[in-house]
Image (spheres, rainbow, N blue to C red):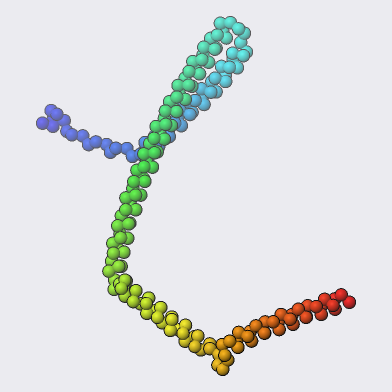
Length: 190
């Protein structure tokens, strides 16, 4: 049967986006070279047209220049289409890479979620125990504050006298400071 119908041929693997982009860049380079050659040829034809006298020879040179100009425009149009196609291929490649990155991110997030679930099952992260510890810590801090206040208390000094002493001390300090300032000004003025 294989002799009659032939054997099934293996299909070539589909080209990758990188292969297609490389091929398009190569084709674009070839078109650019052709356009440069036509530009150089156009310069020669323009110089020839300037040198020739009006007449059939000049008209023939103009026709040759017009033909070269049409070829150049055709190649430029092809190059524009090729660049547009290459841009589209690059957009598809970018979208493909973005999708791959997104899939990797989802896998990483799944792993992190599983790790967090396992960590929250730990006895160390029991919310009730943490709340109780925080309450106990607040009570200890309050006890510490009371102890510090108790140790900072002054002996045998009435509370109202303490304020009066402070006021007198501040007034005396201010008067002494003002008196020193006046004396220093008097000395400088002399």
